[in-house]
View 1 (cartoon, rainbow, N blue to C red):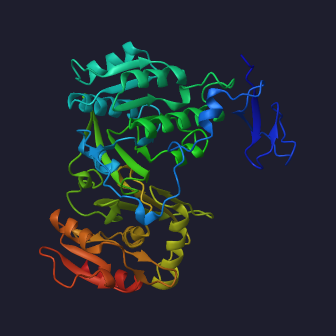
View 2: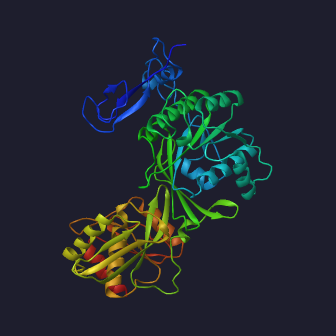
View 3: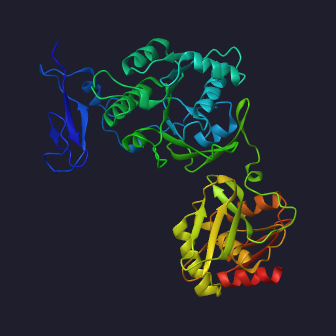
Length: 461
């Protein structure tokens, strides 16, 4: 048998080297050479390089006009966990590849074990491949979650070739790989978790999923900064990327879709960690609203949009006397945008905070990225600075521009209806979001500029 060998490819310029070097000989970049499988020394090709020359979706097909390709609806299988199905876009897709990441101990393995057990009970064969735990440890977690008499097949293995052979012989409907960083192929000499191993193992599992119709879920580690560990191509080759959010000290967890070829991006599922595992939360807005007996200064309720779901989140602000260098700190919101909003407040509304410390927090650990939170942040800061609470049952949303204008937010009608459903009675919204027909139970005030919004709120005191 011909001896196999590897080549090292530069991730910056694509240059190659027959052995690892600290500096690329082509572009002189440091630590960019990554091991990759190549042709064997005898002129033949090893198994890895043969399959590596196809696309992730399988063998190439003949050129076909787009109009001649039959478009079919993607069949989905509900997992039995409603919040997970919402994030996935309706359920598990045949041949789909899902990557789920999050901090250690946040609940990734727990949620997936619950999901595959529910699918197994529906009659779909499932295989749980564990590379970080023994079969006994997985069984112990299953008992702890109350999954008695679970028939999910468990394989404790980290070698890729054995996993592929097991999938070929057992033909499961869904395979869980926990985790992709522990897998390795014997065609590469690098250690499990290296860039080359993660990339090649994920590529082979993706090809297997597309060619056989087996749904594959990959559990991914995260770095200290919170990003998914491994090469960025890992996120590109899979169909769906889910990410666990939330504080490990809190009982609530959020699963967010960062990428989804079969559903909406930025859709979220909300779970509560219980003794019996993760349970979906039917009314997530209740998590993000503090239970004040009476309105307090510095608190403003925002109607934000997460995927297709309107959520009510409490924005809290604290403005206090600062020193020579006042601090601006935000949790769950963009700090740079906070600095911009303070400048707009000073220039266009006459609210000066230059000598004040300003702290802003989104209650419940949720992260808000949409600019529709601008108006709520500014009103909460003004409320804290004045020491006067906003009216009871008050909500708002709207983007604020540098010229002081209040811009509309998408799907304003849905936001207002959600707020009215939860008992809120007063709303300050952009004029473009004002409904043509009144919404029962809520009084709506439409504004064009931020100074108009602040004057209006002062008149409601």
